[in-house]
Length: 56
Picture 1 (tube, one colour):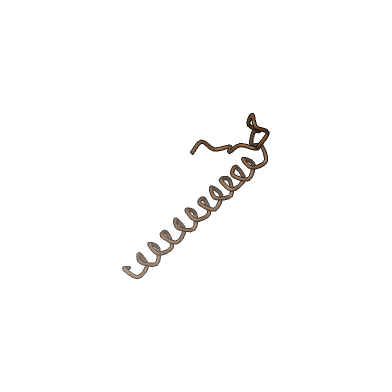
Picture 2 (cartoon, rainbow, N blue to C red):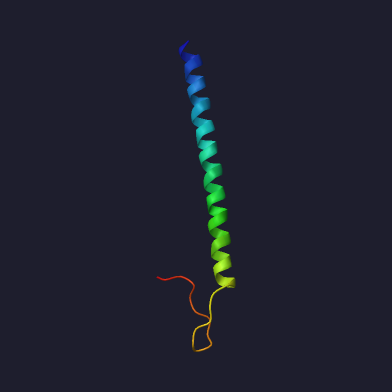
C-alpha cells in the first residue's frame, strides 16, 4: 500500500510541476511580446528622438 501511495504522490507532484512550468512559459511569452511591442510603439519626444516607453 505504501509504494502505491508513493507512486501516486510522485505522479501528483510531477503533474503539478508540469502545469506550473507550462504556466510560467506562457507568462514569459506574454512578457516578451509586451516588451517587444514597447520598442515598436514608443513615443517621440520633443527633440525628435524616440523616448523610453518605460518609467524607470
